[in-house]
Length: 70
Image 1 (cartoon, rainbow, N blue to C red):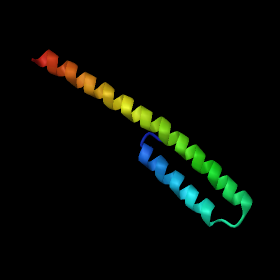
Image 2 (cartoon, rainbow, N blue to C red; image 1 turned 45 degrees about the vertical axis):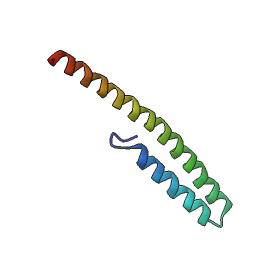
Image 3 (cartoon, rainbow, N blue to C red; image 1 turned 135 degrees about the vertical axis):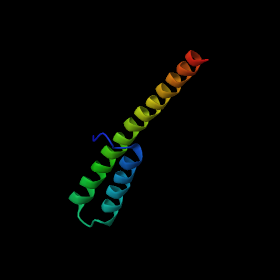
Image 4 (spheres, rainbow, N blue to C red; image 1 turned 90 degrees about the vertical axis):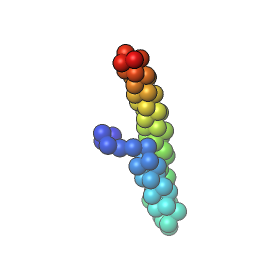
């Protein structure tokens, strides 16, 4: 995953794949797009957890900095 990939980006990709699947008349293409959508949803979930952990780490670091400067 690229360094600038966000959970929102992953969700957008999943939605695009789902729309492509819904628009497809070919079973193989529809199935491929649904598999891709599932993979994008999984990446979004993992990325969301990483973003939340990073935000918590930043909050804790800021609290420590404030205590040290007080």
